[in-house]
Image 1 (cartoon, rainbow, N blue to C red):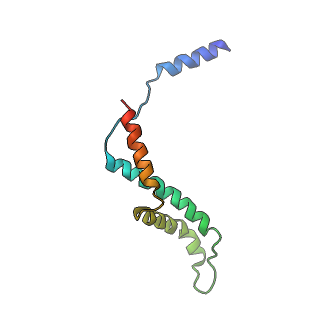
Image 2: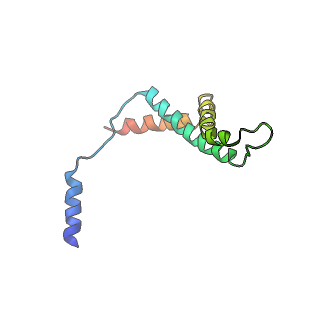
Amino acid sequence: MNAEIEGAVALAQSRPVMTPKATADAAAAKKVGQQFEGVLMSQMLNDMFAGVKTDGMFGGGEGEEMFRSLMVDEYAKQITTQGGLGLADVVTRELLKRQETIQ
């Protein structure tokens, strides 16, 4: 068993270490922060809309059910671009701070 462990350690040491490249591109970091918040907001809205029925006189039926996720994603994008929860700003700051420490 020691030979297996030693072999695994040798293999791990022989592979190049993947480190992210440092960048001070605040626009790219902001975009990623907004995308992250958009995904989170979309998940929250999907849970909120899960209990809403599509039947009734003006309900969209199966078509509405099928395309609801796209509508919710667009709602999430709009909420995020208009300020959202403020999570995008926090993510952006953390990304830039972490990138400053990468050398």
